Structure formats: structure tokens, C-alpha cells
Picture (cartoon, rainbow, N blue to C red):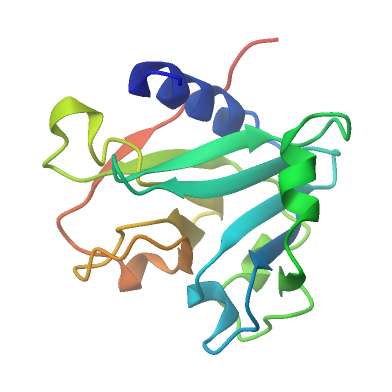
Amino acid sequence: MNSSAKYLARNLTLVSQLIGQTIQHIIRLMYLEPEDELRMESGSLLLETNQSSRLYLDVDEGRGNILVFDASDTSQPINYTISKFPYKYTVFPEGYSQGLVTSLLDQPVSKIEVISRPDKDYNLHSMCGFRLTVSPGHSVCIGAYLTDLKIPDLWILTPEEMDTNLHYQAVTPVSE
């Protein structure tokens, strides 16, 4: 098993690659049919960009962080995990048009911030999510434990829906 420092570094590298890319789809992966609004439903997420990046997002409930995997290469084992989900619902753009995530359409990600909780001893809650900004005033937050309810499900939220006690750290793009 990877240490938390290793997977957090991998998460950071993968998420930083979204800077300059345009989000094409956000897909909710589920074992059961949805009962709630898709952006706040239980289940993993698959984030795809117009530049062919695919990131699989899940929750490490034991450490209160997100897990990020590169699913761009179809031969990677994570794609087998993705194929096992019987329900795949597009949250963005087709499946959700109330304006919260539609600002991501046709605009590249200009800024990413890692979201953490102040109680991040032993890497707990040190990367419980991230905020994607496409232009000033247009951002969404993706992660777990992002509200004062501290729920271990991946949600897509507006900055206004977030717990006010969270910390944000800007991410710089990784040089290739």
C-alpha cells in the first residue's frame, strides 16, 4: 500500500496537469441508481478533458482525502475498476444544467487550489478536494468532507456551499 505522502504527491501531480485544459465531462460512477442530485450523490467521479486526460476520483475514508488515478491509458488497471460500475451518469455538461458547473464549458482551467481541513495531523484531510477556477468568479469544488457535515462522498459544490473553515493552497503546474 502506498504511504499517504506518496499518494498525496501523485494526486497533486495529476490534478496540476488540469491547468490549461478544458473539462469535457464529469461522470458520476455508481453501483446504485441515484436518489439525489447527481453532483451530491454517492459514488466516484471520472473527469475527462478535451485534451484526452481522464482522472478517476475516489475517497480515502480512512485518511479523509481524495484519491486521484490517471485513467488516460485504457490499458491501466484503474479502467477495469471504472468498467465495473453499472451506472454512469454525466453530471457535466449534459446531465446538469442549472449553472453551477456549466461555467466550465469551453474555458480552460486557469487555477487549481488544494482544499484541506485545519485538523490535518498525519496527512488526515490534507487533500480532501480541489477547487477548479476557469475565470474570475467561475469555480467549482470537487472533493469529500467539504461541508460542515464532513460527509465522505465526492461532491461537486460551489464555493458558497463550502465549509468556511477549509484551507486553500494554490497548485502550480507540473513541468513536463
